[in-house]
Length: 115
View 1 (tube, rainbow, N blue to C red):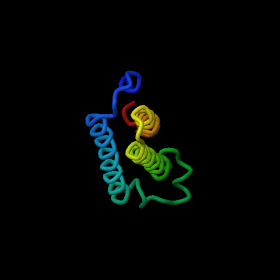
View 2 (view 1 turned 120 degrees about the horizontal axis):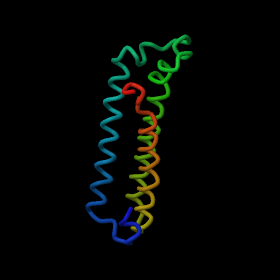
View 3 (view 1 turned 30 degrees about the vertical axis):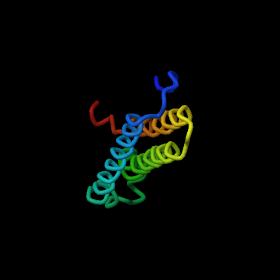
View 4 (view 1 turned 60 degrees about the horizontal axis):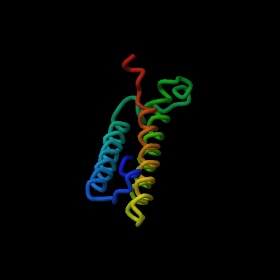
């Protein structure tokens, strides 16, 4: 964010950092999809009755859909950064899309497990 206000060019370090963020999110989605199909809390427990319980619904629908939306936002942000020429626009797009994506991820982490 400081690079945006200091009007620095979108250099190699910024490109690498945004790429690392993209790769980490995609690896996390891959692990999540595998767990979703192997876990008894995932796709195997789909039923109308399960959707009435908040925790079951969270694991079956809300968490996976939200994480996919977050990954899509981060991917869109990365792709737009690659196609944008002006450095300040690149920083703004990374800031907006990555912040939205990571905010969704933070919101959908099952924090109640640790309370």
